[in-house]
Length: 249
View 1 (cartoon, rainbow, N blue to C red):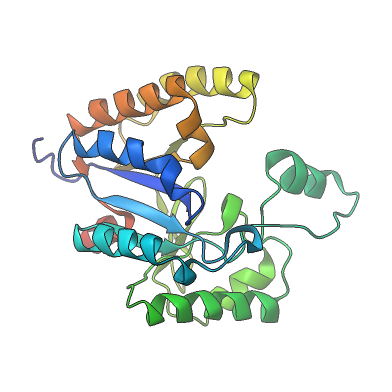
View 2: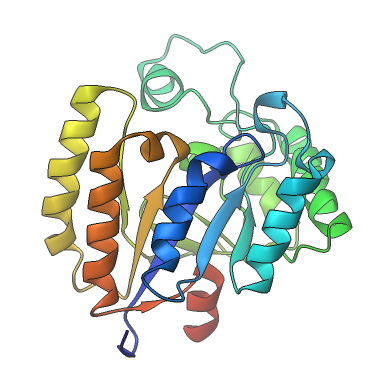
């Protein structure tokens, strides 16, 4: 891997939790075979309300090992679920039931959003996990959560377009390559889309590769992710998101 100046790639693993980490283990090993590549791990404290991660010692040990190796842990929602009723407005129906069912922080009132964020921060602090970033599930951040974020000690959040410095909400462009694996047609479209998109993001300072646990169940998706990662590593430096922001104040 050669030093490539200011251009970088960030490999981001979404929805990291005790129940999903086994899905990632083979992929993480394949990435490690390519060299020392720091990962940005989006960690969910209590995925779908099935049990807090700090009650799973093996998972905590795995995350401690990742931190010791240079990875970044990011708070990624709290439950990663959006079970509430959806008003019959086309935009809400699309965002909360077609685009994703898990936009937890899209409709929360400010006080509820702040309480969940504080619970997540407290959990990270108890485990001695440093945290600079918060990423809302589905990249959906409503007005209440946005207001709550401005009062808490996070350095950044992010959306599909890039990273967002806090508390001023200053956007930093960082396109992402991401796959949708929920159905055969989505997987096929993702493979075509990301092959074409790779050329269109070549001039970006930071390119993110975002993967989800469900992607790991489809060999064709995993092969393309690894192929794109190898191509980007030939011309970019691998960094976590917080490392990139620290180098570009």
